[in-house]
Structure formats: structure tokens, C-alpha cells
Image (tube, protein in one colour):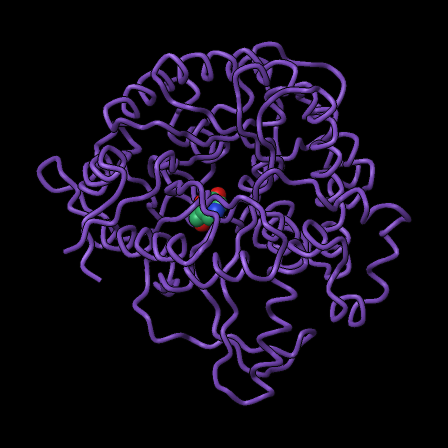
Amino acid sequence: MTFLRFPEGFRFGLSTSAHQIEGYSTADGGGRSIWDHFAHTEGTTQDGDTADVACDHYHRWREDIGLMEQLGLKNYSFSLAWPRILPQGTGRLNPAGLDFYDRLVDRLLEAGIAPTATLYHWDLPVALQQLGGWLNRSVVDWFADYATIAFARLGDRVQQWVTINEPQVVAMLGHVGGQHAPGLRDLWGGLRVSHHLMLAHAEAVSRYRATGQSGQIGIKLVMGPADPASDQPADIAAAGRADAWGSRLFLDPLLRGSYPDILLERFPEAWSCIHPGDLERILDSLDFLGIDYYFRSVIAEGSGQMGVKHLRGPGPRTAMDWEIWPQGLRDLLLRLARDYPPIPLYVMESGAAFEDTLEGGRVHDRARQEYLASHLAAAHQAIAQGAPLQGYFVWSLMDNFEWAYGYAKRFGLIYVDYPTQQRILKDSALWYREVMQRGGLEFEG
Ligand code: IFM
């Protein structure tokens, strides 16, 4: 066993999102989001689950902060529900919605926990979807106006902001594959949405910078390496295309001011949404880059729009059927450091769903602990090899509404017994408490 110590000031944390934990989205004057609508549409979620109640964090937030204190947590990443603050997405403000986040932030700070606030984690106000949602370029102003309200109210205390969580998922699962709200299936539309997400992000950042507030602002991208299935040139080229689609579609405009040529060439009709000056607005709109890492892809030459085929890698798998591949995190961090201009990096989500069972009031989730230990070790290696990684947030504080999977998948370090809303610290939570307290972990590599 070796003790892997992280650098002084490294930020260990835990993450959640509003729609997945809060419940009661329309309480006290809040509005409905596209996920409220989608999950209530037949056949969209496992067992017809909805986030109507979720973890009832909207009412139990004090108790939940108490649990964070028990864990000795110092950094907590959560999201604001746009329709709680602006029920129609624009215009009339719901003071009770803003008050909720205001109190949450105050109490976190009292508990010595630094808040990281995400403005958009997939819960677009339904009223805006009726106007075209992310397909309508006006979303850039709608989003920036909402962001400005959040900065004005919370920006004196929130020192780390994330504009948008996983734009890949919004564009591709929401608008191309249809597995997520708003459930659309339109390839060109998905690409247009991806550009609008980038622009909305950039506009919110420019509003933030105009406030003169002293915090940092960035975005969270979900990514993993696209590894070629063999050393055949055709597979290597296919992996390059998969990487352009999954990662560079977002990394390149943000950090290079361009979209990958391969995507411009293959989908020429989609890009009429790029107006003169857009790419200049998007470039340099990050103080840090947040990375959500869950798995890598193994890619061979295939068919379809991108000519790629996804193969099953040899690693063990989580309950999501995602391959466990910690070295993918190291490779990703090093690649970002090598291929892009220098930018502070944060792992803002890392974690795994397993089949947890409650036995005598305990959850012995050894597999999750091992998963996290191996990924922390990979992050540690990347730092040792020069990646400017500043923090690592585990997904998630507690079990919650896992979108189309409903409550069937548990990612939490805290077990939630949904019928009673009882919270139980899993073994992994007790282990992570020690990691955070010691600033590192014992690891046998
Ligand atoms: O639960 C999600 C989260 O909302 C976004 N990132 C991935 C997690 C696990 O699927």
C-alpha cells in the first residue's frame, strides 16, 4: 500500500443536481421543467418513475447539509432549477425559489462547505420549450438573463460557477436520440442545439465577468477517451471521428475557437446556425474546465453518419453496464493538458452505480469504494505527470433520480430509502470521509 497524497489545496467534493434530488418542483410558486413533463409521458422512464418527490431535498436540505457536515465535506456542487427561479423561464421572478438557494448557500457556508453552483442541469422551463427551447437562438438571451439573476443574488457568496452540465447529453440524448427530455430525434437539430449551448454558456460567462465578481466560471463536459479497437488505420480513423463527435464538438469551440473539420464537412446543413462572430464569443470563455468521467469508448470502423462502431471493452462493468476503466481518466486528463491551451481542470463528476443492498442498517458497497479509489489513483497519476487538476467531485452525495432509469440505479455515497426518505451512510461514504480528511488515500496499484 502506498499513500497517495494530493497537492495542498486540492478540492475533494461531492455533487448533485436540482432535478435529481429536490422534488416538489412547483412548490411555492415554482414552474415545471421539461423533465417534469417528459417523465410524466408514458414510456419515457423506467417503471414510470418521476422526480415529483425524488429525495425531497427541497424540504430536507438542512438535514442533508447535516450529513455533509458528518462527512467533513468541504466542497459541494449542486445545481439551481431555472423554473424554480423563473417559472416561465423569463420575466416574472419567483422570490421563494431564489430564497431557497440563498438559504442553502448561507447554511453551506456556515457549515464550512464551499458551494459550486451549476446554472443548468437539464431542467429547462417547459414554457421555453414551447418556444423551441435550445433549438431557438433566443435561448442565449433567456439563459444569460436567468444567469444574471443568479449572479446578482448569490454571486457574493458562490465562488465557483458552472454554466451548463454536459452539453453533449442535452444535445445528443435530448435532441438526437430522444432518450432524455425533450425527447426529440433530429440529428441536424442536435448540432444546432450544441452550438446554442456553447453560445449560451459564453454569453452567461460574459455577463458574469461584467459583474466584476471574483469567482471562477466554467462548464462541465462529459468525456472519455475514444480508444481504437485495433492498430488498423481504419479503426484509428474511426476513433478520431468518434472523438470529434463526443468531445471535440465542445472542446474545440471553447478552447480553439473552431469546430472540428470532420463535423463541418459531414453535416454542412447543420452549421447555418453559426453567425459571424459566434466562435470569437465562445473562445476564451472558461476560467476552468469541469470534466465528468464515467467510461471510455472502444471504437472500430463502422457504419452510420460517423462511420463508427462501439465495441465492448474488456473491463468489468457497473450496474449501468459502463466499463470500469480508470486509466481512461488519466489518459483524458493528460490529453487535455497536452492538446489544448493550459486551463485548470476539475473532475466534477466521477462515480458508479452498483446493486446496493441494505443489510442490518448498513450498505457494504465495496465495489464503489474500489471504483473511486482506482479513479482517484488515476487522477493522482495524471497530476504527477503534469495535468493541472485542482479538484475531484464524486457523483453523487446520495442516491437520486437517474433520469430515464428512474430510481433503479444508485450512484450515491448515501443510501436513500425512498419510501421513508431515510438516509444511510454507505461504507463508501465513511471511506471517502477519511480520504477527504487525510487529503489522499492508501492505494495498492
Ligand atoms: O446522474 C447523472 C448526472 O445527472 C449527469 N452525469 C452523469 C450522472 C450519472 O449518469
